[in-house]
Amino acid sequence: MNTDNNPTAYYFSASGNDNNDGGIDHPMQTINKLNSLRLKAGDAVYFNASDVFKGSIIIDSSKYGTLTDPIVISSYGDGKATIDAGNDNALTVYNSAYIHISTVQFKGSGRKRGNTKDGVTISNCKNISLSHLDISDFQKSGLLIYASSEIAVDDVYAHNNGSAGITAEGVYSNKLTSHNITITSCQAVNNPGDPTNLTNHSGNGIIVGHCTKIVIDNCMASDNGWDMPRKGNGPVGIWAYEADSVTIQHCLSYHNKTAPGAADGGGFDFDGGVTNSVIQYCLSYENQGSGYCMFQYAGASPWYNNVIRFNISENDGTVSDSRAGAYIWNSSGDEKQFYGCDFYNNTIYNSKEAALSFSETSKRQDFRFFNNILIGRDSLIKGDKGRDTFLGNDWRSITTLFNADGIHDFDTWAKKYNQEIISGKIIGLNINPEFNHPGNADITSADNLQQFINYQIPKSSLLRSNGIDLKSLFNVNNGGHDFFMGIPPANGIGACF
Image 1: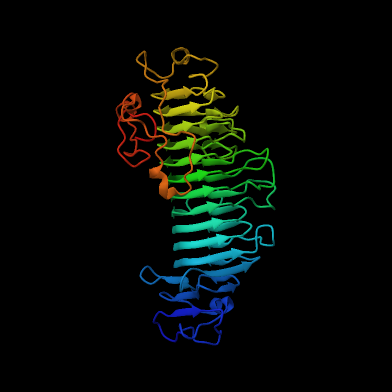
Image 2: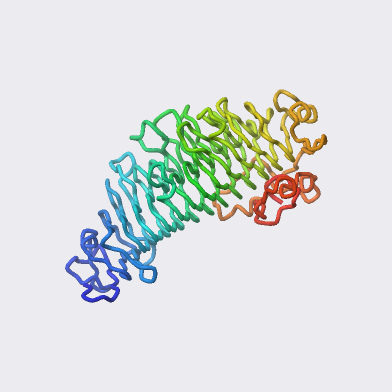
């Protein structure tokens, strides 16, 4: 045991004894013993990687590290030790700081087999890092970050949980209580739904809300939401609500679902109250809801100044209400609550439904669609496009070459609605982009996105030079990168060059 101010490493093994001193040759045994230790800055706790430890770890305000001497919780030996929480939380860190948690598996008894908790909870904390974790079989979220800041999450595999794989949120109606959170290289897989939640969505992959300055990078969400126990608003693979300054980038969201007859089930979503945020360089495919959702619900704070750029959607939105690759919805009934969206240089390919869908309730202002490739099976637009601006886009119907608003000639449509026209000249296109194997996405890791060449624009294509220059015309900075992280042509159309 530690008897001075020097940092101490405590080892735990299933064959240990709580009366031991905790050295590597004389390990302790139980989580109860761990919870009784007075951990201080620089101390470390190591679990034998080949063992299972039953119980719930609690780190409270009496146990905290420093910038130079964090408290470490990890495994020793090959692989990950397992913390089996049964029906309880596996790890709770409350009102603490500078805790590093890595290389551990946290497991509950199952979302329908007795567990009613979150797996790992970080609450009212600062400067916490979580890496190389496996979190499964909890009824609520696998990982919950609440009212915390300076949190780094890396390589967390959150699967077979109920409410969500990973959740980050703050105090209700306050976007500042959770901030500066990074979620990188994580996977949220097969989080089907919370069987006890009969009034709201569940079964999300990664969800953030009531927070600011969030980065979700190189993450993947798949096969979530299929067992939400209700009809109504549904889950999404990766999304944000009531949040400011969110960046979702280089992420993959596919095969996400919703309950039979329910809404949503999409790939990515900026939902009610999101401001000053961006989704970029992402791939969405074969989600039951739309790949890219722009939503504002009644009672949310205003939604504005958001950007969706250089993304790909393939065959999304074929099951739930959107029936399109991208979907716009506003149930507030007030266009002043839902405004300011730039949707540009995206590629939407939908061989089964439309490219864009506007709900019957979708009042909005200042939505602009620039330099996108918009491909649908037949009708390219569902619903009322309102006063939105469309410039520099390539439109293509697979079955009829062009069909929008019941018009089958692109030039006729453009002139009737005064779209795709600058100084009296039609600048939009209605050409075949000549993609390489469209409709055959099979990427299962965000690490492989830059090998996804199915929608790369051919070298000789007009799509490389016939769009609009966003910087010169609208002073829009396009971020400087395309889907492949190369430099896009100033007048390029689509996501991949």
